[in-house]
Length: 276
Length: 120
Image (tube, each protein chain N blue to C red):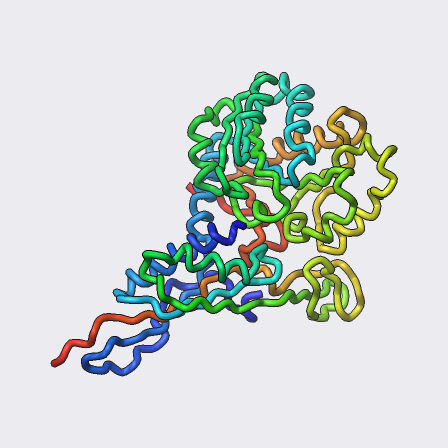
């Protein structure tokens, strides 16, 4: 990528050329910069990630359209694994405490971020929320992003993995319509599969083909949050991820997911040294 | 409409460059926006005046360089253009490709005006 556009986040700003000074007139200069526009967000995200890593907490960012079943998935997951895993949740919505209250009702700590009019969470919002949680008491932190298939893909929050949900009523062509979001995912969950019997238009294979055409290289699971083999596969995925995160942090490594606008680290989840 | 947040981050970067180089005014800003970056150039241009208002970059021209998607095939090694939602090799049609361009969201260049040159 870098030979074409120089996007390798190169050396700090350099003065390209100094035009001849002209007395009594302002000088203009061209400064070659080449930095990621969101580098400040990325620094805060890296700081969040080091918080998570220091406490061996796996952070997962859940993204989908509104109503795809993110909160229901969390409720069912807490019911299934609440005795086995220490789970914490950060909820992002434009308004209301509704989702955090649903999670707290399951007996798990939850912090609600209300973004006002913002269509996504950013690293600074998550940082504030993290300070309301006791990370040392957690194995896994779910960050439920604002329901939106566009904007959340562009902001690193400090998570280790991105999970994108596609619910059956939405239609199997969503990955083709929203490629940026689905490309950012490490795990794609086709949710509400109990509705497949009623929604004949949705063909899971077509959703899988659409994911393949946008270069999705992660895992795809078909499930219903009401239970079944797909849901069990999700729980296994989760437990394995927590285990491998413990092994990674024990070796002083961490993991950053795909964040769309960041050039260099995109092609696969990047294995990185722990930042302090 | 996260383009406003992106613009605010952009202005933050430009202000830093302007400060480091003792600028009086920012004349123009060049950014690179890839087709897969998740940012819409037209919306970025419309959000820019809102974010720049009252800053040193208030009067600066925003130049957006659009970067199309390019992929390199893992099977036949060909490089070709691709659509955002159809990342397939243009030569052999295989889906196992690496994206080589189109994911950028970069501040490339800032043109500034510095203080009057002192008369010696």
